[in-house]
Amino acid sequence: MVSAGISIKTLCPEMLHVSCVAHCLNRVAETVRELHPCTDLFLGKFKEVLRCNLSRKQKFKEITGLPLPPKPVITRWTTWLQAAQYVTTNIDKISLFIASLKSSSATVKSLQSIVSDENLSCELLSLDDFYFLIEATNSLQKECAKLSDAFAIIKNVGTKLDECSIRAPADKFAASLAKNPDLETLCTEKDLAFRLRMEFAPSVSVDVERSFSLTKKILSSDRCSFIEQNLRMHYVVAYNSFLTH
Image 1: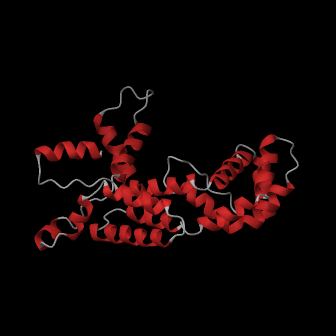
Image 2: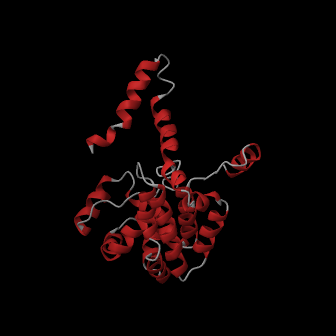
């Protein structure tokens, strides 16, 4: 995306190219995950223990009184942080459930070993400084968000990352923004007419990527005679699906 923007700007030097700022925060979240390997391993094992096991899921609800934990999916933004936040908030209850497991499987034994590891407690305490990335990323993905609001979110994220004791996420954030120099130019332009035209300019490519995912679900090998009219109606229903929430 960055390389494509640079190439196009050679032909259109006045063009402002802004890559998706939500991707920028996702790269920071990935750096946070890499810095907490014990938590990452715990979440993977915890997910595996509950997966496709109705009796364990029921036992988890009975012992903890909690809803099932969110599933961390690397390709879905903030889900890893959401799962880590869930564990941080409910670690005592989760520990009781893990201790009650009597299975001799390697996964259960590994999970019981990790939950008693002091490194896990230290990492969960450290992660508390980064959970604000969840709300920030979700706010950037809202429909009809103003460009000024997106820039304010980015500045706030930068300030909070600078306050963290771990420097790597802040450095990753700065490196990502350095590859997106036109963002600040777009947001700090003084010309009033320009700012009014660009007030609702998208700062993220989320809608485009979601349309790809939607099309993948609609267009499958089982639908060889899908006509354009039906495709259009499917898109209308999908686009307005938020009305049913």
